Image 1 (cartoon, protein in one colour):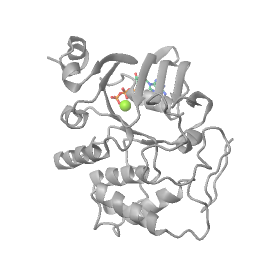
Image 2 (tube, protein in one colour):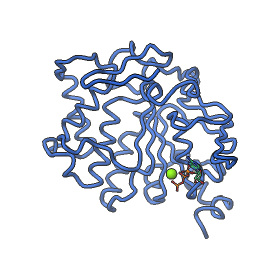
Image 3 (tube, protein in one colour):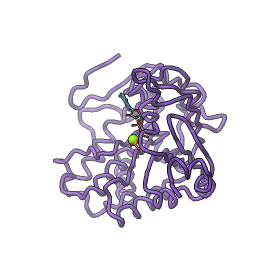
Image 4 (tube, helix red, strand yellow):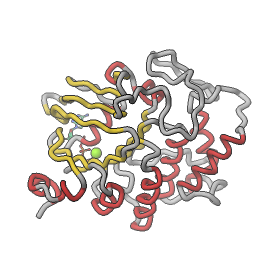
Length: 284
Ligand SMILES: Nc1ncnc2c1ncn2[C@@H]1O[C@H](COP(=O)(O)OP(=O)(O)OP(=O)(O)O)[C@@H](O)[C@H]1O
Ligand SMILES: [Mg+2]
């Protein structure tokens, strides 16, 4: 069910799992669209992904609770990005199941449907609209949210304007809203993209190496930002920067991936002391 969008048109879908008719729900942790009655927002069960016989994911099982900030670590090639590809529909699993809440079967959906069901992803490279201002980027992100009624004469309501203000503060770009996004630093672009994701109020946010290429100061501010989001969103963060992971994991669960499956899971302190993790990743 692919459909090419014309300028100003908003994607609407009648597919199961779509949020077309759930209405705007700014300021809520989770919408009525995802059934999280058992406390989890994401269930990956026994997922295998084979590329010409090579198993990038090998019987991977992992759950994320509603409101959790889960850190994923592990060596290069462990399958972290592939896991995000499976969740977002970019890659199909050869076996196993992936559910968003209790009822939404991600394997039956394409990338667009999964995004609209409420899973937002940030890739490593920032993809902002460079010619547009910071404010316009956030506004465009809001327009791309299909829960907002499509209109040729889109005008921000005061609630939506307030939402943009709130996000600008959160992403440390208030006062810079008129600047062209192309003129921002790498770190600021990353924050803007996180802001654009947040404008669409995803139920689950996936961040792949959000602090790669950032300065130390930017990394520290990104940790602060994520700590502010804690509990308000369900978030999965893949990162190699252990200082950053320690900052945001706190007492929460960290999953260590290795050769396509979960090698260890526990608090940062627990996984750091796990001999198998030291062996394959953290070193002695
Ligand atoms: N499309 C593909 N075709 C073939 N092999 C692939 C494909 N995508 C990933 N792989 C392989 O699958 C394995 C897992 O890759 P993945 O990118 O998921 O690792 P990662 O944990 O994200 O690593 P990094 O920390 O370096 O980002 C790697 O060996 C990679 O080469
Ligand atoms: Mg990766």
